[in-house]
Image (cartoon, rainbow, N blue to C red; front, side, top):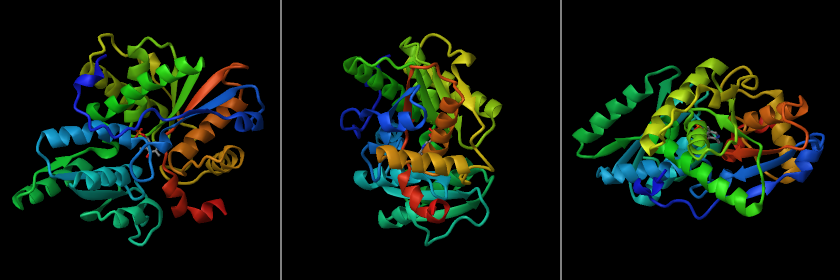
Length: 332
Ligand SMILES: *Cc1c(COP(=O)(O)O)cnc(C)c1O
């Protein structure tokens, strides 16, 4: 894979840290050694995984002469926060369309990411009902802005297309080099699986380098079958985009759907426990919607003996902690 050939803005500042979590591992019985890749520390307002994807997506937008970015997400979307953040840095306008997946959940005065949308000077926020055709809504807005003389570029939800997922192919390469330098042999990797770009890109990077490191995704919204098909489709397309010749085997995609709870963004007891446990053992903040539920999955898999005793397991921290401040009552 030669990822250097793709346009990229250079938003990363070196590699994000890989840290051991001895206290957290001990709290979970000490039979598995847990590590964490700190993509929550990526640059961009308040950090998180979308920066890796936007590094490629916004480069593509600028190549196409765009002066305006349109994207969409849930009402507390980290992706919207980071897209706006990078658009601001590039001097571009940014418009957001928020999908109210939980009825009545959008509040203009809400804290968390919503507060940051206003702080960074979003051009417009529109709210669409849950289940809306978000691409259709964004296309309508793009037509309107074109009529006003703007040149808008649409980034899909989560920046999960082949261009965005390439950011996580690069992450797989980055972390393998780091592990080599650290003399650390990882047996298994666990990632949150949402709009699928992170999971798909990571699998393409691991398969495309013959790393032999299995990647498990923890779902935050969909059922196992639906999510695995979504990840596999995007992984296959991304592999073609980055020039991986071999097919991505369906067996390379594994998702766990037991930690979603009542639905996307709705709190679960195991999420609350995981967020509190990581904060009180390692001083690392997760979020209620993605990394908290994914960590609840990892905690449960460790307790159930899913990983062999003595194995090294790496968790990808995708960020999202600003959303914690929109869920204060859940944690008190
Ligand atoms: C978007 C997001 C994810 C999920 O990544 P996908 O590429 O959408 O699957 C995980 N964690 C956080 C904090 C996110 O914002």
